[in-house]
Length: 168
Image (cartoon, rainbow, N blue to C red; front, side, top):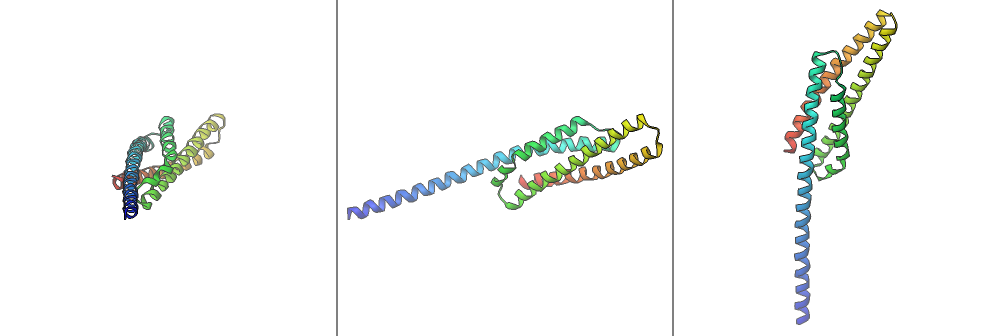
């Protein structure tokens, strides 16, 4: 009979430890999720403000703010480095949306860098040559791409705002 009590006590101890470890793991996972959401929220808010500045520049002026684009790229790299931590988000859908958001943002910034280099190259060519028609065509192309980039910036800012609401 004493052996039975010993086995029963061991079983009870094992089940208690198993339940405590489960609770501890659940708490650790929740804490990691909160930390990830806090970090990503800050990065997305900073990215959104940079997008807003860039949007205003694209809408009003005819030049590129290299510092703003550089800051956006830095924010994007920070988010990219934390992509693996998105496993702590509560749903697969939020994880996929986060990855899509990073990918779309990277594509937009790549397009802006392409447009920027094309713009600077055109300005340099115009200083050295006198081909006015080629310059006008390139400027028209750049203005069209700038408008498309402006639309993309508005769209990505909307998606960031929706994503922030979902993770809150």
